[in-house]
Image (cartoon, rainbow, N blue to C red; front, side, top):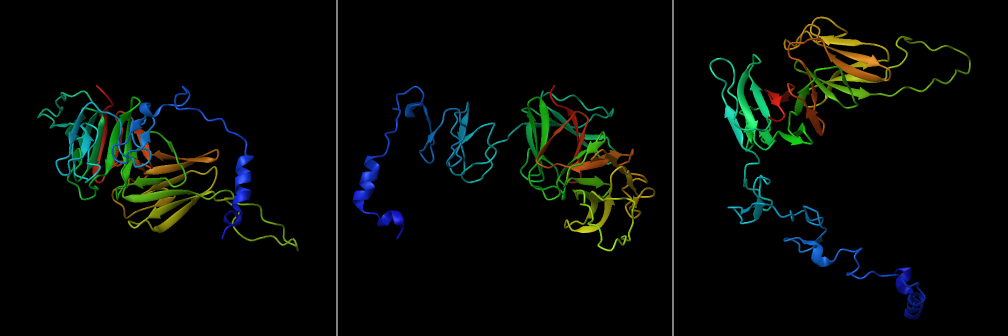
Length: 330
């Protein structure tokens, strides 16, 4: 039995009687929103603060939309043009965007799409435009399954990545795909701990090690044996297998540039025919490391972690398909 439960009833009553009186605002007080001004969740029947689009308790959408329809599977309401799947049964209930596909003309120049949203080009193996996609509302899911931009590729997940225009910028987000979503770099790009690079067919992960502490002096003044150059390894490049295990590694030290390639450089991959002779460099600048494309044939790509803004002309790799951003808006 707890201490509070063992107390006599008279002691508890006396404590409450002597407690200070708290000021309580009435519902009619302008500083407190009245219940009549609060939203009402249609699912759990709890009150929702004004301006909230979703119920904070169960997550059901509560904001009013211009057009609402009913799911043909279970009859639950959904917002047309916003919801892609039914929140109750999971059935697809709508197309998030209209995607217009235009095959390039015989002259090699693609016809201009009628819509005014962002334009994305699907490139073939030679780098030429194979298909145009125009997103009429600036938001699309790319994948092998029930996606807005559907591509037949075994390396694509059913729902692989999402493109979305927000704040005048186009953002790409990976949707937990098996092989990830990649953006090709155009300029030297700073590396952060955990970044994964695609060089040819090699997955190279960058990891920070930190600076080692000083060695304590020996009691008998005997000097330690070992390499003095470089003085410290502060980062490491890890070659990853398909199961994400580490096959090989290469350590990085301050003020040192490391080249990677098939034929020349500090770390060679002679068995990778998709890698250029001198493919990329990892450059040390102050306390940071930058990856630089050395004019390689297949480029250098970075895995998208979370979401990343992409620019006009930038290429995005999903599965084995390369998309190029042609425009953010018309």
